[in-house]
Image (tube, rainbow, N blue to C red; front, side, top):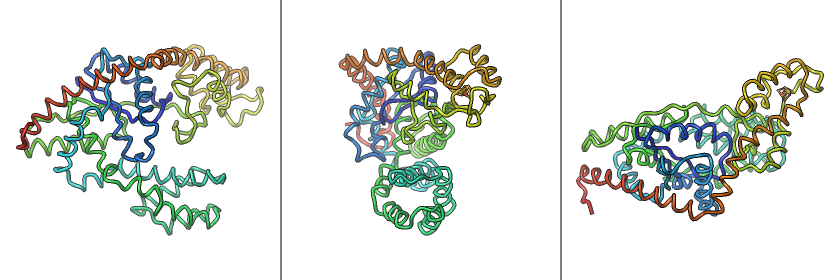
Length: 392
Ligand code: SF4
């Protein structure tokens, strides 16, 4: 099967990426023809102002993949912007895609919601205001979804009810309306990113795309665009299947979803020293105040990590000892720390080798991009012919 999958270059990868994406890629590359790409154009759809780290992030992403075992002999590793045919196909798809398909795309709405929520949250936390984040999420969610779009009046009232000072609320609302957040999400690039995504996939005539449940709408719109093109011109595109992959259940060190914006991640390149600090700071069963209190591993984030990094027999022992108050949380975290360190150690070592030999990484990117280009070129010829264009 031909598989296409990409990741945005937004900084070094963390354990959530490993268990949510990379682990699956490692399995897929053994028995499929895989195209894995750095989606650098997609990184610009909402971060077009923050480009100073982009080049470094592209290299970091490829280095992370290689360090985890993504093998350039088995998989084609390339950078999206190196294959200009993606943009040509996206432009042509833009001609045939009704605007309503994009407006209805739930991922577009979700992403817009997340940006607004993050903006409001960061604004509040930047001012050191202690606030119930779940409550805030609920308020912004209500304002965003239940009232079609942000209802500024309702949001002002709800935030004031949360005992946030009126002038701060006013400032937030003012900034959402006229500040950077509005510009970031109201661009043509952001609105049209599903078209670019469809081009990324269809240009290689992929059979399947590994996705999490939340990305299913992207595949659906890709299939719709393929169908529309095939009906209008000539049946040259395959309708790719979604390879549903389970999203990572590994939470951040604070028990929330692992995300850079929550500052709760463990990077794949995490040094041993900071890893130790992070693991020792993890929250445990809140009712367990002393070692003599029996614990509840089923609600403890440290225990859920053990299931990923500790061997099965030891996990069972820890579980029993925790329930019988025979192990302290510090001891339990120390075991976890050593096991996570053992897991990350070979990845870190490989990363160091690649960092010291950046020329080799560049060569992998150039070779992969060239290979992807050859495949894309072939398909673009068919597209131009089908649409009555000249093949220059
Ligand atoms: S002993 Fe381990 S599993 Fe039990 S509450 Fe403490 S950290 Fe969690």
